[in-house]
Image (cartoon, rainbow over all chains, first blue to last red; front, side, top):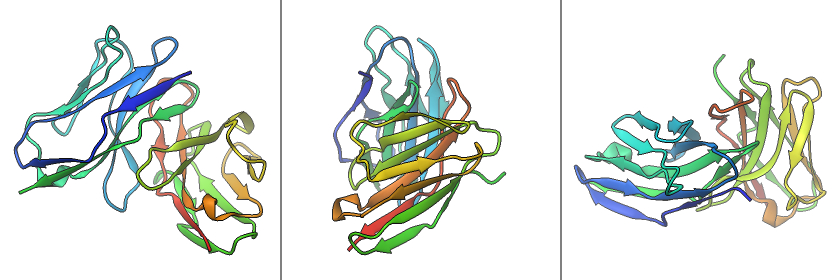
Length: 109
Length: 113
């Protein structure tokens, strides 16, 4: 069945460090892929998405590229800020949305 | 439209009681989803509707859970005879039918004591 495997956390980085959160998926066909973010005390918000192979989603300095050959959608940011501290979820869309377990990111000044 | 709205935001109930949650989706969206999230985990699928039709329900979902979307607009999720293991955040989301993202509400936090 369809599923998402996400890098385990928590992750702690210093401000301005480079961030990578790994995500791989299993699916029939070519689903749309998403990264959602959940800030403390808030609901899930879409961070970025990609709907077909080789698409790059980007938003707020974050990027992820839909890699069909490696079934991956890794999240990257070149320079994290304290305000990026949150939980990040990788997801794919079939009929429903399948989510990874989430990666907690803490950025320290 | 201000987004997906869920009520109540918090619910504390005694074990064995029934509870009902409401979700008002974004008006143009014909798909509506219910998820459950526990601490440290990702959202777990419960069920989804397209308009008023319930198209899929998780096989792991107890018969104590039922959901409705009578006119294809708002939806309710009922849990009968609540158990302590039902304590979680219940999330509602809505979307267009294909390819696009889901928009989530703030959730209803259920505590069963």
